[in-house]
Length: 167
Ligand SMILES: C[S@@+](CC[C@H](N)C(=O)[O-])C[C@H]1O[C@@H](n2cnc3c(N)ncnc32)[C@H](O)[C@@H]1O
Image 1 (cartoon, rainbow, N blue to C red):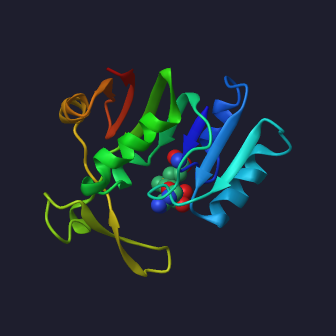
Image 2 (image 1 turned 30 degrees about the vertical axis):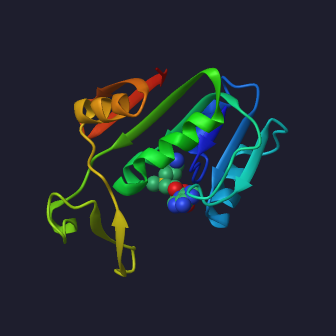
């Protein structure tokens, strides 16, 4: 399996319960260090430090997973990101993701329609970040238009998850 934007590794340990091996990619050395600690000694994991908007895979995978990453992909990078996912998968490969569309009113500094919001660190420092509020049905249609058959399920809260493959 390939995990994109693995962060501190909370999903990596879950994936390892099902996968023979996991390649976990993230741009942040701090996150990768946390993920490595979380996973512990396990030869089945390979951590890769890379910017996903520039990275190219060196092999193909049965499954690509990303947790709480898609909502941070800028709309103008949506298609190229999914093209990367396609390049990472074997012909019968599957993709699975989980995410949320949670944005509070005070975060919407550019309005409801904008993908840019403002979030603060615990010390109060403000940062502008990309947080796209995908709606499950719209996301399904958007993905179908670029060649994916993915069923997106919503939960009772702001969360959703999707699973599928190339058409
Ligand atoms: C919201 S966190 C999700 C982490 C993890 N998947 C989880 O669910 O706990 C987003 C992650 O994306 C990583 N990230 C941000 N920009 C990135 C980029 N351009 N390439 C690779 N990783 C990136 C961050 O370092 C962070 O670990």
